Amino acid sequence: MPDDANAFQTALALILGLDPDLIGIVTLSLKVSLSAVLIAALVALPLGAAIALWRFPGRGVLIVALNALMGLPPVVAGLAVYLLLSRAGPLGELGLLFTPGAMVIAQVILVLPIIAALTRQQIEELHGDYREQLTSMGVSRARRIPTLLWDARFGLATVMLAGFGRASAEVGAVMIVGGNIDGVTRVMTTAIVLETSKGDLPLALGLGIVLLGLVALVNAAAHLVGESARRRLG
Amino acid sequence: MNEWTRLDVTPIPSLSLSGVGFAHRGQSLLHPVDLRLAGCRRTLVMGPNGAGKSLLMRLAHGLLAPTAGRVHWEGHLPRQAMVFQRPVLLRRSALANLTYALAIAGTPRRRRKPLAREALERFGLAALEARPARVLSGGEQQRLALARAWLARPEVLFLDEPTSALDPAAIKAVEDAVLDFHRRGTRIVMTSHDLNQARRLADDIVLMVGGRLIEHGPAETFFTAPASHEARAFIRGELIW
Image 1: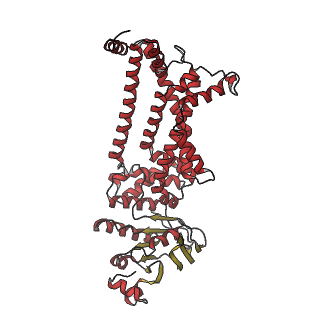
Image 2 (image 1 turned 30 degrees about the horizontal axis):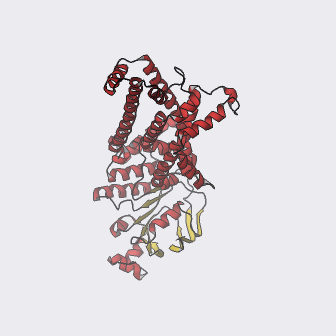
């Protein structure tokens, strides 16, 4: 077993040498998580805005449920998708289990409540400021959804980055529905788990560094977006 | 130029409030009011803070539903716009704020920018069209809100203390704009607690104190021969509530 300093050096060499295995894993991770965030956002942004704007029976329950689902354990989401997609499951015929598609589905389930719940909060607050003006102008409730989503765009970018952070960092769901198959469904987090348990620390460490860098990048981006919005738009 | 005058000869429908009251959590904020506003006049709703002026405006404009009585337009529902004390502008450029209003009003896309630019020009904002609306100064923001209202070609314009947070130059700009609206055939309903402003602008005065309508009549009568002791005190500049 190599000592830690040695492992660290090898990890850096893998990253700087653009090791094909490492690149493949990182690329798949990004593809899966970005797809998941994009798909989740398409549903969750209008959904969150709609919940913010409409009053209907069961609204309170829905909001509590969404907030609770923000903390949904990834392994539970993975298990649910596994049951859905397994041979005997209702969607078994699609043959999606152990494919990147299944991983995207699982991450959509994890990310959607986060984006929907945070969008609901932001839009409700913004609508508090806009309500009278929009009512005065005769803006219909459906028309307010794109209006408010656009005006909250910088806050919502941060929300989506939070979703991406959750998706790219989770391991439980993609492990269960993806199966961590080399070259097919192996992503950064599952690879780290595997390589660590095998004792191949350099690859695990290399992936860990990339993942950490990615998370830092995402947070820096979120910060910059927020700052520039405050400066430019008041 | 965007010279809309009311070519249709239909008179602006009268607004009648009959027994309109508003209560919140069992507390009456506006005691039943009977009020009729007709013709193309400039009505200033006066009174101290908390008199219910803003509430009356919101009920008349339809932003709030009264808890008692009825707000009724005699005739068609007129085109209306409202300008608020603190302008609510979208987080977009000055120009985009106006094209948005035009889009909502159903103006065809290709006509939106020319119309919006004309309105910016009219309100002295042409140089600021690309500026984010929310970093404009208070006076500029209020002018932009007026430009947006202008594009709605309102038959009735409500203004809720539109000048109370502005400096004298900006107040002058807003008052000129109000007179411009009126010249184009818009009925003006505006709240204010500034007697000088009322003297400059008002055809009619509505005086409210403590959630009650105290007096309603021509401005001249109000200032020369006020009927109520509240009005006399208000004109003398005494504290009333």
